[in-house]
Length: 133
Image 1 (cartoon, rainbow, N blue to C red):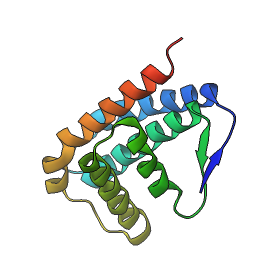
Image 2 (image 1 turned 30 degrees about the horizontal axis):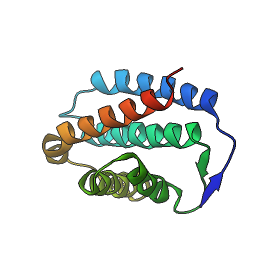
Image 3 (image 1 turned 180 degrees about the vertical axis):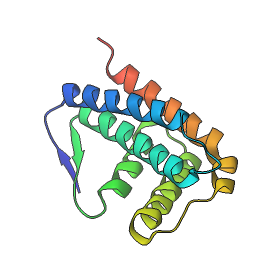
Image 4 (image 1 turned 120 degrees about the vertical axis):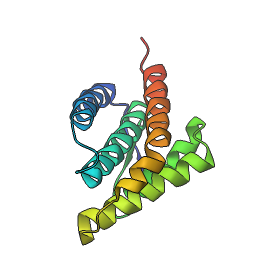
């Protein structure tokens, strides 16, 4: 469920700081051995960037479908349908990994890493533009 809240740019900036830490961590992980952990961290980075953008604009998502709704909300920021589908696919894979113990294979990262990094860069650019001043 989407809630309209007071803009929380400070919290958004704090979340962005944690995103930077997560990115440093991912760069130092061996992708051949830890593909699931890397994919899960890409998801967390994407989700937290979306959260920071929403908070900056006075929105918060709560409840059972909050992450799905958060991803869908990004269509308001020129995120393409293909990018939204990729973000949602990663959400589903991450949930299966976290809740069912299903690994995310190296082949997934080999095929999707550049696209995921492009989405992350795009979201970071949106966040930066929303937080100029």
